[in-house]
Image (cartoon, rainbow, N blue to C red; front, side):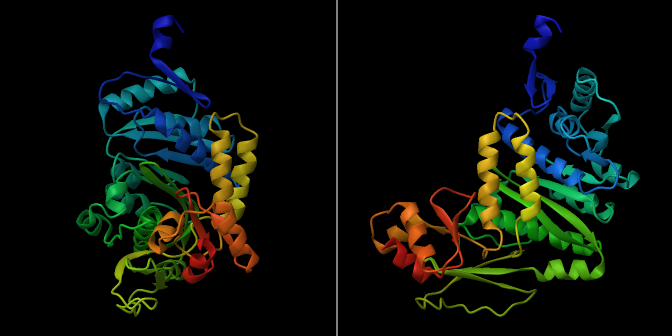
Length: 375
């Protein structure tokens, strides 16, 4: 490769891509996400009896899909699909640059591609903005046991800054509060669960990530009417009191919810429907950790830290407490997080830090016990 060619390329993981093509999006800040989910592809591929076939449905430069294939031995066929002609041409160049085999670049509408192909076992939806225009057909033409990886970068919508847009796009009411980032993940999963149920699938979330300007989830599509009904029943609504920060949730299609806070008697806000089941599968996270330790990713330590925090989140109730917000509401000075964790654990509660935000905890302790621990 000559000096001019090198000046127009970027290397990431085991892939190298040409840059500078006008109108083709490449975001180097998403390197962490691409590395993180390349590990998820590796963990998913190990559960397959044959090599995992992947479609990157919004391929752009092709960097994500190519990394998935280059870094994981269990990946077979790869399709890089993009409706943008410039993107498809650039992806072709990058496939040749990386000397990739069993890889096909498709220029065209991905929903049409889903209709024509039904052999994909791993479907990657990583668009700019909402994934919803791609979601229904991705699921409708999927097969049981397929993996669905979905990114949403419209976090302001999901977190409640643009509540009407969330209702319109996701058929869910958001709540803009201190745990809005977890709300965002759960609204996205709730939409996936309902869409999957329409097509005869339930979902099993394997890993759910919230970071900076995006949320991303990986689910397995479990075929069968009972699975579909079970996933819908794992959705429900949250209630939240701005006066005292108390919150709760209830599963069900039409659950009975009080309009008054049981703690202070003030009125509460409602959010949903959203996913109220687990966000991660612990064994899947552990395999990702093992794969991460064997790879030389630049973000390896940050990835390991996030995965360890996620393991701690498994088994705990939905939503988290922002310790600074609790202290401020009580008019108490902020205390060291480690001390608060120790106090709650001494009382027999399970409590961990969360990957969603710093200074936030997930716990099975009620709010009153959290208040005592910060006092």
